[in-house]
Image (cartoon, rainbow, N blue to C red):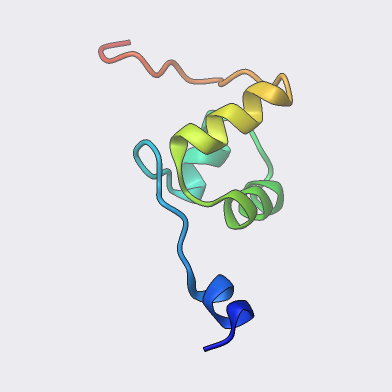
Length: 68
């Protein structure tokens, strides 16, 4: 196999629990198209997506604490 073929089939490890697109869009009040774009570009990792949104200075709209 060529190096390019290996790169396209390799999967990135998921850090944190995975988000669904709907959960990610709801948490950050994103339009469906924008949530899908970011989700497919960065993957379902909650850690990665939360870091991305923090860098964009977009706070979550829902509390992530249990019981709130």
